[in-house]
Amino acid sequence: MKNRIASRMSTLSPSLTLAISAKAKAMKAAGESVVSFGVGEPDFNTPENIIASAKAALDAGHTKYTPSSGLLPLRKKICEKFEKDNGLSYEPSQIIVSSGAKHSIFNACYALIEEGDEVIIPAPYWLTYPEVVKVCGGTPVYIQCEKANKFKFTPEQLKAAITPKTKMLIFNSPSNPTGAVYDEEEVRAIAKVCEEANIFVLADEIYEKLCYNGVKPFSIAAVSEKMKDLTVTINGVSKSYAMTGWRIGYLAAPKDVAKAIDSFQSHATSNACSISQYATIEALSSPEEELQKMVKVFDGRRAKLIDLLKDIDGISWVEPDGAFYVMMVVDGLYGKSYEGKTITNSIEFADLLLDAKKVATVPGVSFGADDCVRLSYALSDEDLAEGLARIKAFVEELR
Image 1 (tube, rainbow, N blue to C red):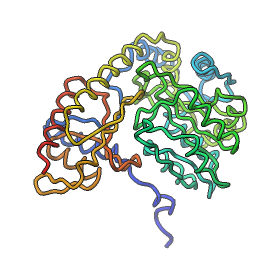
Image 2: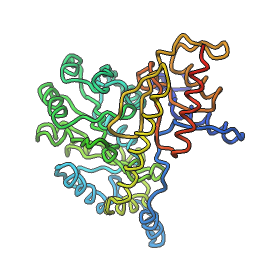
Image 3: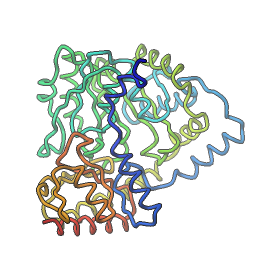
Image 4: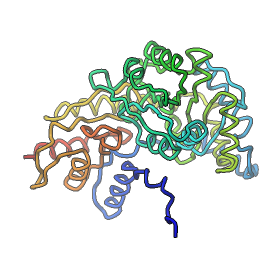
């Protein structure tokens, strides 16, 4: 008998983010007091007007199949969003709506990456990127982003990583897990290298609206027509509109790429949830007052988290300009022990912290940064303060 499980599945690593989250939830369900800095999910509810629009869609009977690429009114609304926010002009045929931005990323990679293609991924990276690349037959090639450069890679590093096999750069700004945001000058310099090498860019802009310190992101597809023809831009409503469970992501791509993705999606999943699509039309049509309130709250939590980190000896961090994460650098504590258990890596640090102090973090090794753990500040001020107090106590008890 042949192998029961296809060999390509052996390349996949399980999500440590979801594993930590599951363990923390199980502990909570057992009555333990757990503070979770784990999953990247806004703790706000979806705005009421968006919820009302979904109810109206249900009442109107909009419960049938839609075009595989998404409702035309939604794709038109997404085109308007790209024009207004990013200075990018697309036709509805270039927009594909999928079941979350993660789904959009998979679709884009499946359409573009072939066996043996190399895909450059700056590290620290969102843990799903290399797994998707491997499933699609590609080979991840990592660029190590330096803390001294706020976890951002340079054009020189990119140029050095490109080979004749390079097909794509995955470019995430604002970044999960680091919160790094590339300004227009930096984006243009990166685009120049990509244009010269004629490689695609998968631009993940899902955290686009969540920026601080007056920093503004810049879409790499807006650099030039050539760059636009080499770019697939990923976005969605999960983070900006607190709609993680609604599962709507979307992409904008050159016409031939969009057509290929639409064909694939029509066989793989058909359309994204019809009711969620109607809710997304409302989200993208809404004034951004609620969004700005959420951003202001996140910015306050970001400042509070950094202030509390200053009181913990032996750790460091890089101040983020976007998203809602901080990478806490903990390798200065490696070699120390807690109740006889020695810490030598980020998994051991995160496991001991969760067991000892009931604080969930995500090991940095899953992001290609084993010297760190990721903290999400998408949680209440009270939990933030309590969680940092527990982390401080844990570090002080290390021997």
